[in-house]
Amino acid sequence: MKTHEIQLKKKETIKNASSIDDLLGEVKRKGYQFEFRREADCLYCAEENYMLTPDNFIVDEYFHFEYPSDPNKDRMLYAISSLEGLKGFLIDTCFVYEDNISPEMFQKLNLEYVL
Image (cartoon, rainbow, N blue to C red; front, side, top):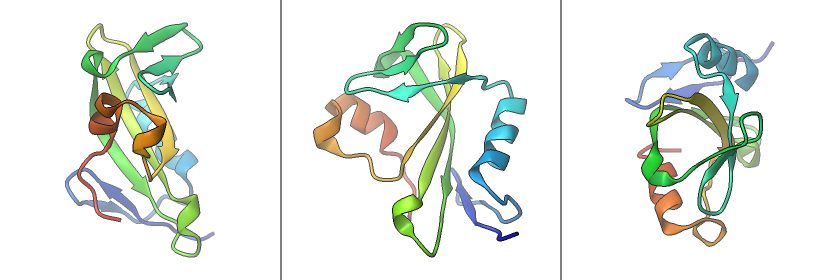
């Protein structure tokens, strides 16, 4: 089984995760159960029919999952908390494009990490 490197918020690295699913399992064990989808100006949770605007959520942790053989497959996993206490996750591409989202969403998800 191939090992990938996962870069954490403070430039730490997990080297034993074999897939983003392994990492997602860890995030879910921390209580981040709801899946969010990125929209142009918010995050949306279909399960709860709940929308979060950028001023209503916090990115608690984020992880860069890297595929050295194909950078187009690289993904970010965000652990997110709403101000009301809803905890969930977002899996997204590593390249957050400004033209697809509002400037506020871009700023919220364009976190400091190095590819």
